[in-house]
Picture 1 (cartoon, rainbow, N blue to C red):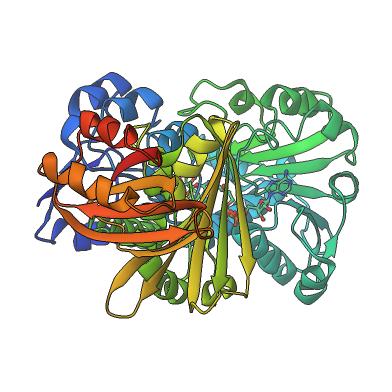
Picture 2: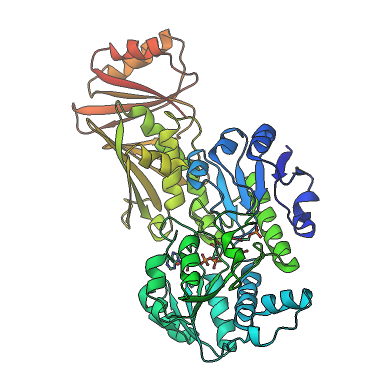
Length: 527
Ligand SMILES: NC(=O)C1=CN([C@@H]2O[C@H](COP(=O)(O)OP(=O)(O)OC[C@H]3O[C@@H](n4cnc5c(N)ncnc54)[C@H](O)[C@@H]3O)[C@@H](O)[C@H]2O)C=CC1
Ligand SMILES: O=C(O)C(=O)COP(=O)(O)O
């Protein structure tokens, strides 16, 4: 099979080499396309690779029935409609590590340029003006740099600022006192950081919560003469508020690599002499571009060939070591879900997956996703492990996971319980060495059935002749029974038969079985 990859933003050719030189991948590079042009083009592509220029909309994804993965050669994924990708079962991956250094170095370069008016002085010189007293700067030494967002880039900026002998204070909801102490920096609330900063730099992603987090109110809390840096994302700082704060003299200067709307030419902030700017160059180094292109191509190739995502954005990743342990259970989990889906008479409201034995020590979220995928596949078409839990939650289905060490003799046991408004059903399964997946319990009845092919689940009364009548009628329908298991609660009480049969039972055959004496219910299940 050949996988078709569309690259719609400029990516490093050297970095893309693993992809362009691989046999099974056909790469098309076509940059600068409009949304409409991408929509026209994308229907046969399996992967789309972008940087920050391409806005990947729902309409693009809906026009791409074969699209399995969107690769972002960089960090920020605010240009990708993640909700749509998740809903449509498209994996989004990014390359979060490759451009950290470049973005941090660019931030420091901007801070030094800002402190010493280097761009303004250079511009004057180009225009043949020898300006000295107009461009008196300030030292960084002894100044306080406030960092909002202490992730990969924020931390690298902090180390470099300490090298400039600045004091650093940071705000990040995940910054612990321990880490701050180890890094030799201060930490505080957002308000404390705003109030303490001589220079303030933001390094958060652009999210609903961070949109305009630096606004008129935030500027009001800052020192007069503060200098502002944004090498993260346009939109974290409210540009109108920044403009007003510079005009009023509250903010002495600003260095911007990113804008709310890009490309940002003819921007009112660029008319202010206190503002220096670059056209989103934070990640634009040879090294960073090679790194991110290598990372994203590896991930995309791996995913298209059925492997695990290394840097998934729209679902959680799992270490290879854990993956090795839980992967054998993927198929079982999905089949248990698929089995139960067929036994539920009305809308599912709650799913609980119980993990027992060895599995109780593992990260089991991927198994739960596969169970839910098996459950939903019957009702919804395009369900995969990316969108399964999202689609379930959207339909109001509660998903629970529970772990216990008791296994009733099995090394590991997965039990799925599904509730609707009227019934609760359970099915448990395990892996048997050399034999693969087995269903070992259906509701309260112990059985031993391979969950595959065509099955009949017959609920009946434990009476002589019940089994015979089922066998005789199936013979009349020319349905051959491959295996049969019987379980009962007590002698003469309720019981079940689990049959595997050689061809798919038809509706009228199921109805016929239901008419037999002592038979309560019959469900045909094909997995
Ligand atoms: N200008 C450029 O070319 C580049 C820009 N970027 C931007 O920089 C951003 C940061 O990149 P990384 O450091 O690699 O990401 P990261 O995920 O390592 O760090 C982001 C940090 O922001 C923190 N955060 C989230 N919400 C917050 C809030 N409300 N207040 C305070 N902190 C908050 C997170 O806890 C996290 O520690 C990216 O999302 C991207 O938008 C990244 C690379 C290059
Ligand atoms: O990695 C990021 O988030 C960036 O902003 C880099 O953007 P770019 O890939 O240079 O368009």
